[in-house]
Amino acid sequence: MALIFGSPKKQVTREDQKNDHRLRLAKEQYLAGNLKIVTTEGVPGRDIVGAFGLLVCRSYTFDNAFYGLMAQAIDVNADAIVGYRESVAFHPEGDKYYSCYGTAVRLKPLKSNKK
Image 1 (cartoon, rainbow, N blue to C red):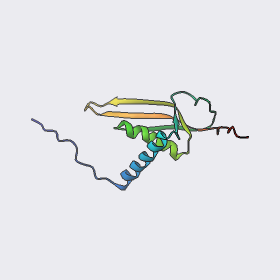
Image 2 (spheres, helix red, strand yellow; image 1 turned 30 degrees about the vertical axis):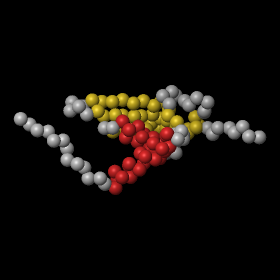
Image 3 (spheres, rainbow, N blue to C red; image 1 turned 180 degrees about the vertical axis):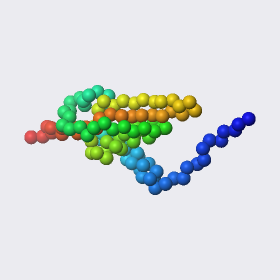
Image 4 (cartoon, one colour; image 1 turned 30 degrees about the horizontal axis):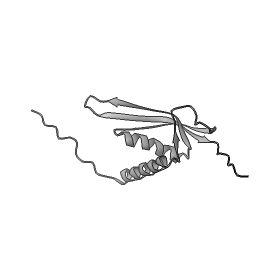
């Protein structure tokens, strides 16, 4: 009879703490509405003036994959992610592996109505 106890606890490194901080900041920016994410080819009511390219983030947790993608967009100073997609792969051991991807873009500034 085999007993499975799982993997040993991983030591938390400075790199892990830095990534946690990046993900927390990305989550705050996304929830505040400062970074748009859409599944369409453009953001309604806004023009795209430049594209930074495809961003991809993968993780065993959906939150890390999603907010990791947001953190990458913030790193390149993007205003939005267009063409957002996500997928999940199931491993034989029962683990799920999430992938989130989209194109980081710069949007044309909104015109102010002030005269």
